[in-house]
Each structure stands twice: as C-alpha cells, then as structure tokens.
Length: 512
Image (tube, rainbow, N blue to C red; front, side, top):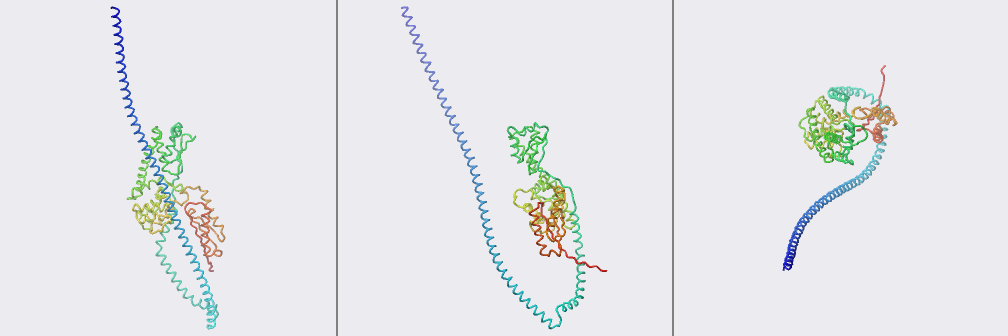
C-alpha cells in the first residue's frame, strides 16, 4: 500500500507537471503571435511613410525637371524669334538694296542722257558765241582784247567805290561781332587749361597679415576660392607673392565687392561657401548704399539739385569707372566746372551747363544697352527720368551722334575735349604719345603736294598745308578723305581725328 501510494502520488505529480508545461507553452505562443502582429502593423506604417516620402521626392524631381525643360524651351524659342527677326531684317534690307540699285541704274541712265544733251547744247552755244563775237567785232571795229581793255578802264572807278563801301560794311560787321569774337577767344583760352587726373588699373592687391590665411581662403580642394570667384565674378590669384592676394577683373565695382568681402571674411575668420555667399550679398548692398551716397555728395558739392535717385546712383558708379585710365567721376566733375565757367562767359545759365557736363558720360556706366553708343544710351536714360531738353540734347550730341539744337551742346562737347583730349589726362606713355603725333604728320607728308603738317589738339586734329600750284580745290577734298581713311586703317588712336587740308594762294607785292 505504501508503494502504491507513492506511485500514485508520483504519477499525479508528473501529470500535473505536464499540464503546467502545456499551459505555459500556450501563453508563450499567444505572446509571440501578439508581438508578430504588432511588428506587422508597425511595418505597414513604416512602409506607408516611405511610400509617401518617395512620392513627394518624385513629385519634386518631376517639378524641377519640368522647370529645366521649360527654361530650355523658352531659350530655344527666344533664339528662334531672334533668328526670325534677323532673317526678316536681312530680307527687308536686301529688298531695299535691290530697289535702290534699280533706282541708281535708272538715275545713271537718265544722267547719261542729260549729259549728252548738255554736251550738244554746249557745242551749239560755243558756236553761237563765236559767231556773235565776230559780228560784234565787225560792228564795233574793235577786237576782243581792245573791247576788254576799254571795259576794264570804265569799271575801275566803279569798282573802287564799291570796294570802299564793302570795306565799310565789313568794319561795321566786325564791330557788331566783336563781343562774339571776344567770347570765342575766352573759349580757346579755357581749352588750354590742364589739371591732374587719376589713373586706374585692372587689378587690386589685397594685403594679408601672413601666408597661412591663403590656405583658408583657398579652402579644401579649392571650394572657398571657387565660391568667392563665382559670387563676385572676379578672378582671385593666390601665388607665391608674400602677404598679398591679387584680384583681377575689368569691372572695378566687382573688384571692390571682392576686396570688401575678403576683408570681412578674413577679419571674421569663418570662411566657407555659405558664409562667402552671405558676406558677398551683404557687401553688395553696402556698396549700393555707398554709390548712392557718393552721387548725392557730388551733386551737393557741385550745387546740382533735383536729380532722380537712379541718376544719382549712376553718378556714384562713375567713381569706380575709368576711360583710357582717366577716372570717369573726376572727368565728369571737371567737365561740369568748365561748362559752368564757359556758360557764364557766354551769358548762358551756368547751372544748366554744369548739370549737362556732369551727366554727359552717364551712358558709360549703363549696362542695359551695350549695343548703343554711350552718348545715345545716356540721352535715353536722361529722357526717361524727365531731364530738360537742353541737357538731353547735350548728352546725346557731345560726340556728334545727333544734331545739336542748343548752345549748351557745343559747350559740353568742347569741355569734354578739354578734360579728355589734353596730353596726360588719359593713360598714355609720353614717348608713345609723341611718336603717335609724329606718325600722324609723317603719314600726311607722304602724299604729293603736301608742304607742312601739324598734329594739334593732342592728336585729335591734323592740319595739312598743301601748295596752291600743285593741288586744286577739288583735289584738296579728295586728299582730306584719303588721309582720313589711311589713318583709320593704319593707326590706333582714342576718339576721332579731324583732317583739315588748307590750300592758300598769296599775292605779294612791295611798295618802294
């Protein structure tokens, strides 16, 4: 009984253990299923998020692609429109040339016929004239020479009287024009005024404290210097030159932006592409404000009021522009002062003349219309901002692109020549300047019949004196044209050269 009880108890224990094991295993399975279910739910959520992100990225890439395609299409369409316009213009010019050629052929034929008729009539008139002379000689009993002698004797007294009257009229006219001649003398005197002018270069040297900064400016694999060049449009040259970096570019404003940006970056110490772009934008805004302030200060110094803010900004930009090495703002201020002095001497309004003198070269700092001459571009800009007609005409005509309609226009032209054409005002070595004048004179002397040549007005005008017995009036006109063409083809010079051929006949007698 005891053994049986023990067996029964042991069996009960084993059966209870098995039942407990199966209950625990079932709970474990349920828990595993729950974990799997939660994992599947989380996976579905993650999957949906990734699909949404992929869709958004696809939509963004698609929009960028469509933008690039639209830009390319617009560029292609713009190019096609320009080509069509050029083609239409060329066709129109061809038709016009064809029409003019036909008109010239017809005109040539008409002129040939008229010349033939004139030649026939001339022969008839000459024959008739001879017959009339013979008849007059028979009637008067005098030869042609004898009749001429008597006629000359009879006209001497009358000619003397008329000559005295003519001399008196000339004297009266000279007295009336004396005031005008005196003013002209003042203008010619002012033309000999000379002042200093500054010279500018195409590079700017940026000084640094030590050469270690060069590596920071260049950046890893050159990313900093590339970002700086892209942001400013200036070539930055970092070489073995100690404690200096060269900024190279033909635009002085961009060079100034690059210099100021470099100064701020080096001072701050943080140099990386994002910081470079931020500093360059900030410097450009500061420089724009400085240009406006410079234009205001110049207009106040000259006593010029009422200028539009856009015109004032262009005046400020002249500070960073040069023409043949002559600072444009310095040249404009000098021209304005000369115009005011000359207008006062001529009895005109000096304020209008000074305003026109200051603004005459604003077209040189306008970049919107590079195909137009700077005088026409400046004239249109002044007209856009409601300047006076006298000033607009003076700006547009100071290089003879349009006709002068006021007295202020020649004053601006003359004062511009005084400031810019005198020796030393613009960048030119003295030896090359003298050699250019000699080449001008020698070129004219190579033509037959030329006696003397003089290069005057700083090489802007060439006076050619020819022999009256070797060159007639018609030949002198042809000679002036040929010399001007040869100068244009063979020589390099600023501005334009005026060629004046002088043919003089002198009759000299001595009273003893």
